[in-house]
Image (cartoon, rainbow, N blue to C red; front, side, top):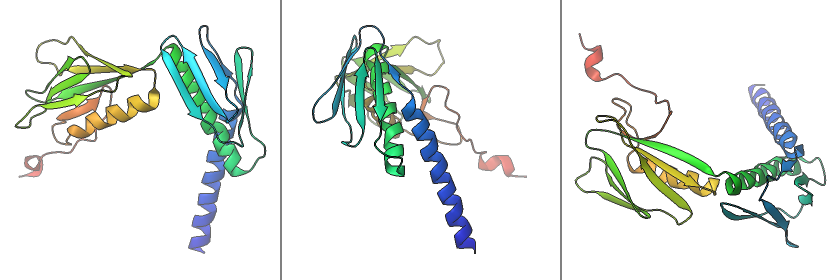
Length: 206
């Protein structure tokens, strides 16, 4: 009985997720000024704009058509697989259009005594509380800059790129170099990120 209930709950959640994704897929993608899109014979979508160029291979079952400044994504059937891919590829194409037109920015805060970050071209030089500095080479598609902060405040690194997926992966890699610890919050965290903090052992001592 319990297994049947769990199975039914899982099926309902999956159906709801697919329904949401298919609703996203039905929305057209509007091309802003200066952005062009082309679909090759092997279903590769290429988007060009002021900030760069991106491409995405689309599943053969999903059709991408361009009508003026509007991009439409359609699916052949209402099967769960097609419905989920419908929303996925629509979201990916929208991300590419936004990326080449306005770009994406991620800001990270370096919290800790003596923590610092310097940008030297495509190389980040970081002091993160280890016995040695860490040098991190950024992909050419990503630009980095440090923001001016008041004395005593945590340094802030700003990463910008037209490639949202690449930007997210690089930011996650940087964060993994010194993940925020739950007691004092020291480490690399995203600006605005809410951390689950823990009380120190002395807090419960009597």
